[in-house]
Length: 372
Image 1 (tube, rainbow, N blue to C red):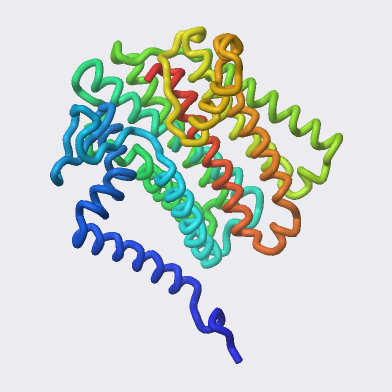
Image 2: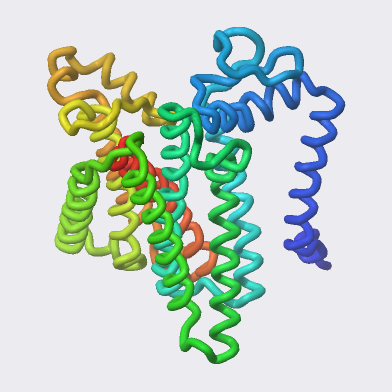
């Protein structure tokens, strides 16, 4: 007798779940606008984007209307950045989206080898750089009164919508690359895929350089980029040498992919520490943490660490070690058995793990480099 799982098509179930969730949110927002739209969707998702994209400290929802430049107290208040609810929601959406991408990869018969992983690496850099373009646009808005990219178009480059922007760019590049391979134009689809990603990243960096050279609102200070890249490379090298010597089984399944994961998350950790604790010494603008975990670590460190020590070395430094430890743990967890049972899902999950570190890390590094 067939089980329920044998009678349900997984792809149809995934589509049905997506449609059901979207429909429920739409109906809830229409039927209960104050509770569902204002108090949930706007407060945790769209409101922070509005505040960020318009360069305001907050956005408010008062009597069903969005208000900018208010007292940040009245009505439903949304601030740029993440909250616990939005962070958890994005994590759940990411996992759900990964399942959908798995179905696509299986249909295309892709995503098995390490070439797929490395070909997607430039797109992670592209995503972080693209987010920095929007930061530069807001910097121009604050200085000149005119942004480089007007709102709401700029929302495509702000979380969470930038993830969809980068995803569709990457998907288009993947489909074009696969078509080129199957028509015999290239020997492997990974080559044009990586090339498109590298070109997108280069164009995005070029736009930042152009803004920096054509306006007085944006300056360049490559010190933090040099320190971050060199520091992350040293940490990744030490991690490789140490694990190969004392725990070689850690790298057995992931190899150089695992080292790249460690490198990407170290970039994120270092960029945060430098931006938060050493901004004055490096001559860059002061920043504040936008991620829940980072904020919590700073709060705990400020409580348990003596004030004199905090004044000397800062309070964000534990975040770097948490990132390195978490990356090492993930690399260790990805063993041969996991890849053998579900190679495509394992490969895509490893890509996502690198992206959630390297994407924000690239943005934080470039923000400090261009002072935006």
